[in-house]
Image (tube, rainbow, N blue to C red; front, side, top):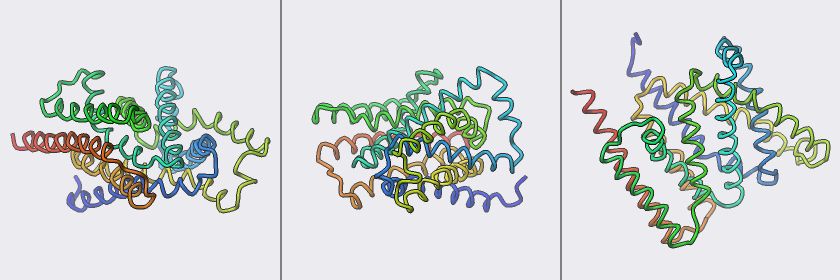
Length: 300
């Protein structure tokens, strides 16, 4: 038993907050690499993340689950799928950041909790509480309102929300922890990423060896930038209740939204504000319902 659960909880909050804050300020990092093609950036991210996670997992003595995963074709297929979804999520996010869509990217991560509820109902056959149905209804109405008024779907937000939601569902049903699972995913995809980077270098179109020195250094840090927040997330998830983690997850899209508005000065029309407002109402209903449900479970 932990002799000081209060201190462990504080450390958990700090770790989780640090993780979500890092994810929130990611646009500042990726924007520095706008001169590098988004596809190449994701290849670098996969490759250098693999080089970061493998020795770290070895140091922690946790390679046995990775060996077990590679001995099962079914598990490998599942991790290849989750790794593919994560790659799509990363690619769309980085492309969006470097093409002036920080606000819409934040919308995608605001939608993730409500997508998770919908996936739980549609895939895991979980029963929805009335408040959850209302929350999803507001989110759907917010997206439809933007489509009706602007004539287009917020596809960046939807792709980010759906890919991350399905990725989370696959990882929820996985036997591996955050670090081990990410290691398997990157081990599966790193050979393709490495081959692509070698080809880019061979043709003289890659960043390494050709871009300004500070860009090359930033590219080499993508593994650390990816891996450290995930470690903080894993630590916080072990120390905190799910509801607390759920509340803290709003830090990332809130910071991204603020950056889009006040730092990058992206346009934010009345229609988009109305759409965001509807989705935020849905999130407020979802959050209050989650807190109320947990309190009832604790005190019942």
